Length: 366
Image (tube, rainbow, N blue to C red):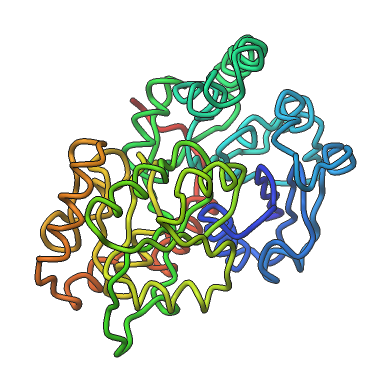
């Protein structure tokens, strides 16, 4: 079987790329197609294979400002050719699911989410308070057109696999398609506890983008009188740094080893935004640390309230501060937290995806 793997873009090792890494390990002869590849930004397992990029790769400043070219992504993704391949596996959170495949070439889509900013999070990315009234007015018809294109191309995959039941619900609402659920992988061999005693600070590991709601965590930790360390980078960093006014420590991008050390040292990890799944809470739990998360979306599937963390019902500063205090005062069992995370390991994910890719790819019935 000759397999083509399609991923939206390769600019860093986030949750989607960690799933892609396992897929690449399982299918070492597969070729990879992506809108944009920043060399050295992903793991050697991904880098050391044929990588085909689109014209977006050659646009000015694309490596840093690729999101500015979003309206061009539909055209770019449709220009890939899959002649000579037997199967296509797309890993999609933006446009990868909309590749055009030749007759007889089956297409399985592992969907991280339908396009957030086109469907239900426009204001979080392009609202007047984000890019100004004029910019928001310009982007609204652009993203409405993207949503129509996203809906109109929803029939291109032969089958959908969702990263969570929450995302499967979104696929049903926006694409009118059913989806199997396969949870993304967590490297439970790498992320594991040691004898480190927890220190008094909360930890966020996140891309600094609007829907992550980092500002909520900053204020909640200040109210709970718990120091906050933030790992990650993104377009919101300057605004968040100004908002924090010294109330949080921004560490930027750090190595995986440093992230693991921070998980082990932290009192708890925070997830203040509504996630489609959320790898970070499971990495923290794999290291034996509890999580305080918004009780919506993927966290309902990754955090067990009272056993591995605290789920906060209300996305307010006072509610999150109360959740933080509750977690600090709860004697969590580290071994219970660890066992929960082990159910999401890389081996389990790899076995499920391999079986789906190599088996008959038929649509799920609703």
